[in-house]
Length: 127
Image 1 (cartoon, rainbow, N blue to C red):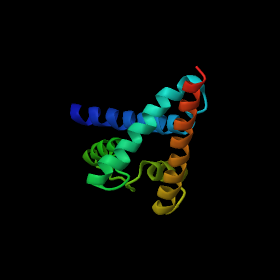
Image 2 (tube, rainbow, N blue to C red):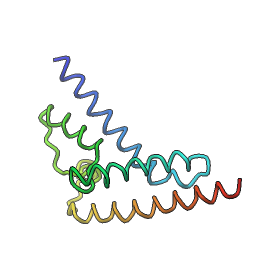
Image 3 (cartoon, rainbow, N blue to C red):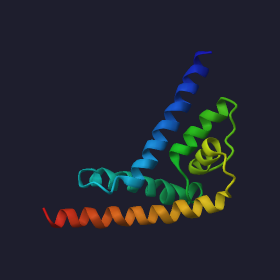
Image 4 (cartoon, one colour):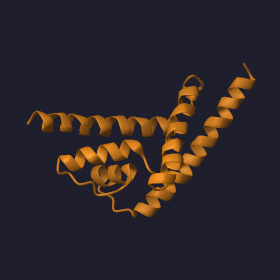
């Protein structure tokens, strides 16, 4: 029983943490004060997707993997391999193909990573 309570707490933790991480990856480059942290978070995301992804499958997300293990232990089988796709299905009920979501996420991520690198370099140059 206590184990189930902990699993439910962890499930909600991962939903909140992963959503905040994703939102910060989307907007953290905008403000000069958050750009160094943003560069760290998008770099960590890239490390997971592309370095760990080389071994576990491209786009592998350590956070999603842990979260899905928790949900499976709760008997809540994830309806998607992608956290973003999961959020769209669960919260908005949209039926969008996972491939379209994955491509959109990848292209958006590349833009965000480039913005972060360019703006962090520019900020360093002008200090």
